[in-house]
Image 1 (spheres, rainbow, N blue to C red):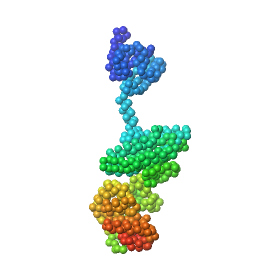
Image 2 (image 1 turned 90 degrees about the vertical axis):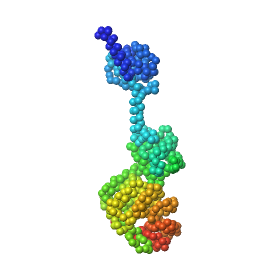
Image 3 (image 1 turned 30 degrees about the horizontal axis):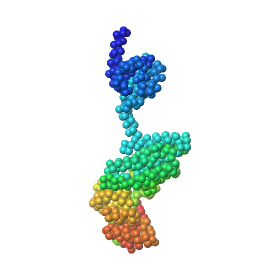
Image 4 (image 1 turned 90 degrees about the horizontal axis):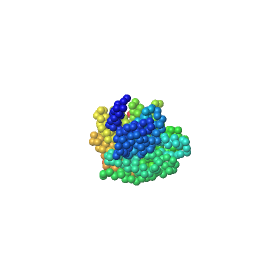
Length: 540
């Protein structure tokens, strides 16, 4: 190739390099720069320099502010072997730069790109995959990774740690009454309380709507309880206000320990979760320690198995309705009055009482399905000249769509609403007061009546009673069974009966087990009696 051709080719390559939208440097075998473009200088902070100043000088002059580049690539350059691009990403001059280096027999090629935007997108994607958008806490996926990493470290040492699973109490009313914006604001506030309570080396995650979990590294059980109690107390004392609403919430918390004895470190998470459920069932606003992880895990598995059993029972009509007479004391009955009772037939053909499956049904939110099955079965099965009482759970009464379901079943089976009384417990009526009040109003207008079950156990019974349109008061059996021998029980029943009469309500006594109890109830003036002395339950 002639000298003129060589010069022309060189100029042609220079024009290409000059117009390429990223930085290019070519370096000869003697490590001197052959060509580069102005983009390189702009990226590396040489805005006032001319590219020609660096030609025929060592490439290290260009990278003098980025010593790491020189260290990374100098050995590669000296090898003088052809190989694929080696890539280094680094941060310089407020930019994320990507340097690709390729060494050939004829020299070295550097390609320098500003990938700040791409790197930011990449970081955002990673962040979204591992973090909760609302609270900016890590999510369950990332939390499990960190627990596994810590667990592996404990297997090589005597490091101990703890898992704390936290579920907020009374959070649902915030969303229901004040809206999801209020709920979101409260979740952020709660997460701030938790972050302040834990140590710098600890890890906090949001793993569900109102569920949080904490990894306490190198932490004794006593210290874990102390940290959790600090969180519990602070949240319990906090009053959250939103517009005209004020709310007090709390937490139920479960604690499990991480030791080098664990084979699967997710067991600690499951144990803490189960301990939290126990704390919730024991009355909420408390802490439960998973003192026997294996036993509690077994109990948890047994309880979870009820999900399949209950769903199978609903699908295959393995639930059975029984009836028990509600007797009118000292008066002639125009219609028979019965309470419908639920049983579940197992694979062995045995009938299980609600005590066996109701706790699991309530915990795993299957009560609405069960209550709908009862309503549908009752409406298509029961005689229309008899009055029936149907029990409803708190989950059902808190569902605003339930009245629509009742009305649809009424129309499908041509049921007379006057033949149906829905029984709701006093505790559940108070807990879901507003939606309960709305359900009672909607269905009462169609002719259904309501009975307040277990009356007398609540703290604000009479105050709430004045605001609820119920037809019957069912006096709690704990007072009835001792009414003959205990003056306090007698006085309580008499008082409840008198209040009912003043309000124009009929009273029903449960647990009437003998003739003496029935006689005392008649003296007091209670309207109805129910119990084994009156009638033992029989299949519908």
